[in-house]
Length: 108
Image 1 (cartoon, rainbow, N blue to C red):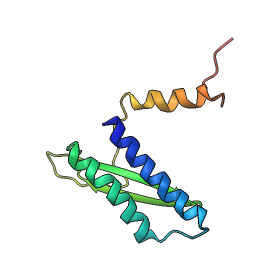
Image 2: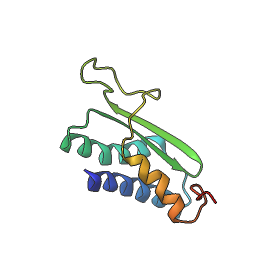
Image 3: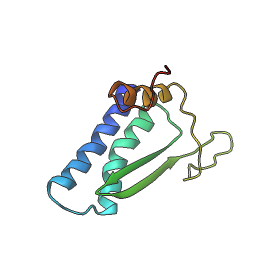
């Protein structure tokens, strides 16, 4: 699943660079089409009931919600849905510190 999520991220980055390279402003429908094409196959392949995807292009934020937050209640994913990160948070913490950004400095 990690590889598929990487592909989703890569597709989003490719979309962002395509808009940036041509100096175009992004059409929200076009951005959604690109994100849909990347997210939907991942959700189907790994039976992911719901996810939220955010993309920033030229300072403009695009947020997309997919599926349900709970299989039991069938409550849809919304902007207010909280997702558990689990072990992914270790990556968010380690990456800046490995790059010397100073977010995780050792105590003296």
